[in-house]
Length: 204
Image 1 (cartoon, rainbow, N blue to C red):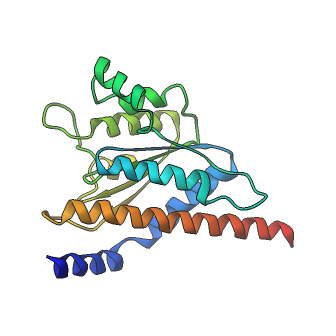
Image 2 (image 1 turned 135 degrees about the vertical axis):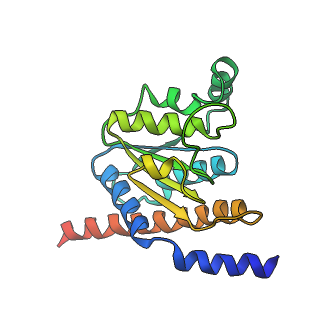
């Protein structure tokens, strides 16, 4: 199992689409430059990655003397999330939080192992992600997706969907969730570097 896990990680690193990573960095940089807000969502293990990413966007990218980036994870307000679930069900928890806030050119970032099921009905997972992405598209906000397997609904709805190239269990879910955290740190480091280079260009 250990050898298989490490071998798969090495393959994932080689096969992950670097161009899409750069596109995600560019979208986040544009949000920083235009003073837009980044909203981050995810369920289960991806909820913790959403919180982590929002924290890094708020703090880790900071360059001394420069403005920050407005970012929030919609999984963090437990009283609000549980109230929505209690009164209206699970599917609308992100959409309803977004509606009063999201504006054109804001960014919605979603973390999901499968990327959400296409379609509606019973036995369909992550419709809360789908509803939030639909609202973002209607608002003309940008969408960045992090998924695995075939990318799910995120592949159809996101401006950029970074798919961790894993197609089978039992290693699929832990590899995808783990590599999403790696991508989190890579994108944060790249974004901070891009901001630094931008600021240097104005010092010359």
